[in-house]
Image 1: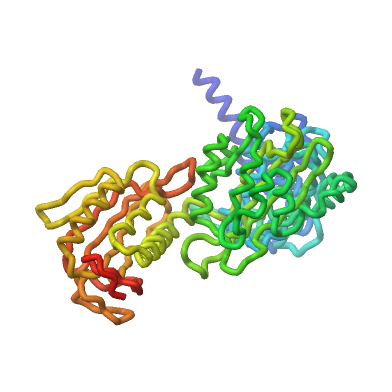
Image 2: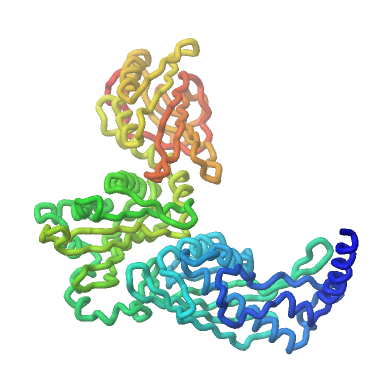
Length: 547
């Protein structure tokens, strides 16, 4: 056994020594990956970081021949990794995607399909993972090409082009334009260097995200079919929805203030013939499948958090991707804003759907599949978390100002509950009462109204910082100011009031934070720090409207 070990070490030693030689090192690190792999499931790295001696850290001192060969191998290797990571149906596609991510600069920027949003590294990685589920398996016959362009020694410019078959049946071309630069860092006393991507521009057909370009698909071959659907491309989307919306509901909704709902009347009635998927950003690969009822619940909460920006009448855009005797494939984009902040940014949300005529002999158009597409630049859970408190307070205060009895404003809680909301209400430190649901809470507040009948609710303070990252469970608190109302926009202490703490929990299917418990503190002096929201129409706790 010792003899075998001795000969193993003897053989290994010269290999280790040779690996430090520049030429042999290049040949060993940069494998010959220019050819197509017959065994495409080997997760070949893009390019191992090159370890170099401290005295040879300057890339500029390398010979032109060496740099040219280094760039060539890098491009060949990256090409293979992009190729074989283009579909989740390919074995080890995820490993190859990680290889691509391993040669990104931390401050890289990506431009995707002419979208106005510039992706950072995290968002781009999310995009890479999410887009692969839409395409059929890559094979040896999949058309692709790459090209390396002339550039200075420290930068690299390449393009990659691939023709993929969408799982809906049509072909689409995806293009990558990549700018990379040499990066040298010190690790444990040694320098390592590699080309890393600084800017990536992805274009082509773009049927899942950004601006659709039918010139990069085979869909323009069906021009005659598209012509008959020209009217369906209007921004109000009503003409397209006419196909599957009952006539008596055609113009039932106000599209300018909330996202439309009536179109769901067009869902295929047989669950066996209807397929719905909704993107979950926390699920890396496949989007979960929903039943119609599950989707309706999700869409209700989506519409509660997201809405058209005030004054935006053209927030819906329809792009017909395919039209033939078998049906229509279309992508609907809604430009929406979250929560109660009117200055919040807007984001595009994409819904892709398939529509067929006379499914099951119904003699009408029906939606047979729907896919809520992923938006890689949006952390959906985080956006909901950051906006939840503001939206709830807006709902509560607006309801409070409309009610004749202040305590009935708590009915707004029912908009934020899935399971019954329990409440702990403090009448005095030794008297804390429990409510099992919102109706019981209203009864307790009626008792509280009798106790504090000479007081007035006149404002709300918030100052708890919302800590990221978003978790499944959170709490937030607000302080209601009671007593004789202040006329100041920024009132100062002493102020009498009560602190409310809300415990919320993320629902994975509805992708929404529900309130599950409230702790309402005793009436006491409260701090006046933080953001202040003044209630203009005030109601005396003795049920008298005073403002």
